[in-house]
Length: 360
Image (cartoon, rainbow, N blue to C red):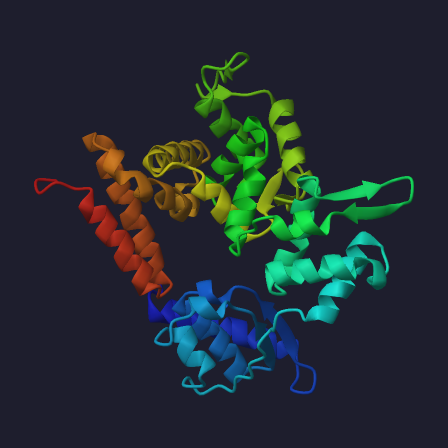
């Protein structure tokens, strides 16, 4: 049985051989990777190996302000890791580009929308993502109105200029989420606690548990968990999709969703009171563990489980559950060591040890 660096070397060899088999220097495989600022060192090392030893061309995007100069990604970008890196800085949209975008979005000529585009540019500094969501926000707040009689959009420039708009995209989304009804807002914040991706069935159970005293809540006879009507959650999810906050990703019989942007999840999570977060993560972690034990897939889901329970470990006081979490962290640590992810492994092992008392 291979462990540690041996596993890593074999995996790197297989990936390198595979990419080499389907590409040539004159016809490279082009791989696009988003959000490189979140990649761990093991993943970045594999990326470097593919660039150096196969016909792979990797195009990556990252947020410049989230990359430390001393990080492994920072060294890669400076060419300190023996690979050639070309950088293209994505600049904000200029006046002409914002006019084109607003004109296309509203289906109106540039001449008619130019005053509106000037206000939008001033409020957003040309951030593409911000421009689009600002237009949606103005529509939602009644500052951008559609005249069906003349088939065009109307606005009041003085009101737009006076409108206080935060320069933080998270604040913009927070305000949008605040305008949702209580059910939609509650479901979205639960989803933020689960992670960037989530299942409809997961939200249904969590939502029912958090609203256990509501009329119509029933209990599953097999699991003993609170259940909420399927249609209620489905309708709320459709509302969140319509608002552009989440998108469907699942295929087949399992309904999966993800936040349409990580900043939306950040905004939703920020609405959860800090004092309430540990209990929420405890409930999510216990549910994940219960499901994994029921389906005999604890080993497969261990990272998902400990990610939740470790964020609520101060609430875990019973010896049996403390020892169980220590064992789960040990499992996660060993799994990490097997793939040469030594940094995360150390974190898991320390978390596990912190759950044990001296005599345990």
